[in-house]
Image (cartoon, rainbow, N blue to C red):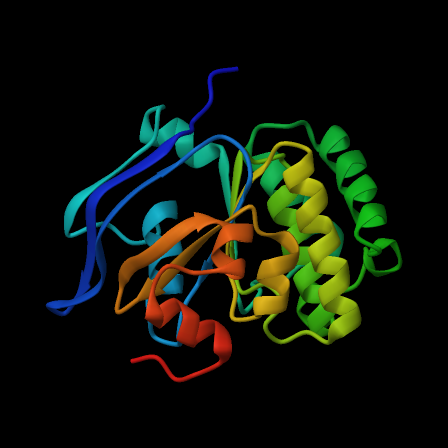
Length: 237
């Protein structure tokens, strides 16, 4: 199968009401690995992910896949910081993306039950999704995002509101998905999490890529004073 990757951003700029939120950004994402986006609050992490995924259109520059946009969109998934669920059962939420891809209902239901088992949601299948706990809701959101085996997954702080146990569960699923070939691009404010799962890092500051590179090199010795200050926990503005 021809890959939708690499994803190439060339001078990509996102504006809202005349204000630049992100950019210009020049970046190329290859076919494998875990890219973690970090930076101070307000640095543009969410906006960068939304721009790459196509949830927000660039005001200047370009965001280009190696396949036509319509096909590339079918190869992607997105997990929001505040998980979103259909006002249906957990089972119906898992079946929905498969049916969108044209899968017969019986096959989709069988796959949904398998996914529920992997994400420890079997006992919740008939429960209304909006009534789930925070950790359960995030597991559902991730299971639904991964059920169609996307080529690339964008995850916006998927563990921000979770406790340690729930965070470990989500991280294990993310790492498993990446090991199985799903390209992962994730924003996080948790430097411990970034160190645990990142292959490479993008450090954003004021909506621009201030520093980027392999995770080990970045965390062992960032090139810039701003990145060093950020990793120390200092206020960077």
